[in-house]
Image (cartoon, rainbow, N blue to C red; front, side, top):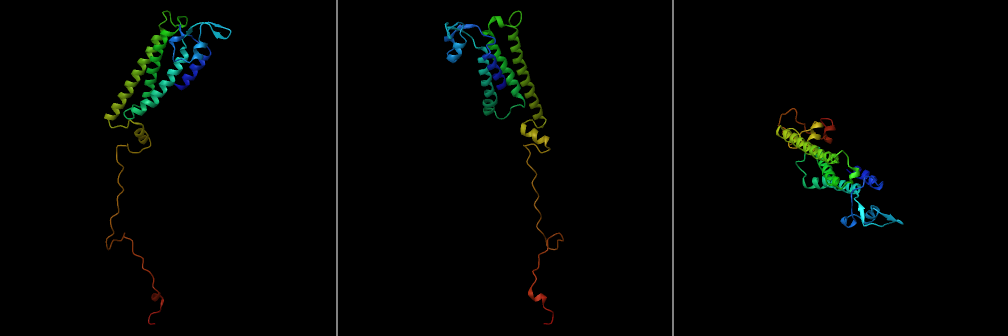
Length: 204
């Protein structure tokens, strides 16, 4: 999404695909220099109109950056457990589709795709449907694996691939050796210290 935002900033600075004309006062959150550069009329390097074209690609770039942090940071922070592997793909498709649905009505009719100008709307709706389907499938697989006792979380999958036990299972306890008994051949023999008297010949 960050890479896509960078590309959209490039589209914006190249003046690609304007939005419909509207009053500059309708865009209070857009920086002044952007509103001036999107003005409909110019003279002597200054805007001479109070109307501007909607900065579609600038808006989409900002939404992509916002969506990236919502999906990868906020969602992970408040929903740490129970997430399905790969669900970020579904959330991205939904986010992208919703953004496109919001933006398409602001597009200049001269840039609409399709005979009826609705092709982009249907395309955005398809992304939302694919995102919902992806999330449903991924969470369905997770529920199935959980019921079957199979690893389904990141740590569990990594442990299973490495041949280790799943995180829920406790590692086997290391057996403690039995205390040595008298007469046990396996028991270590005490070391007898040599005395000085042992070196004297007998009878002295």
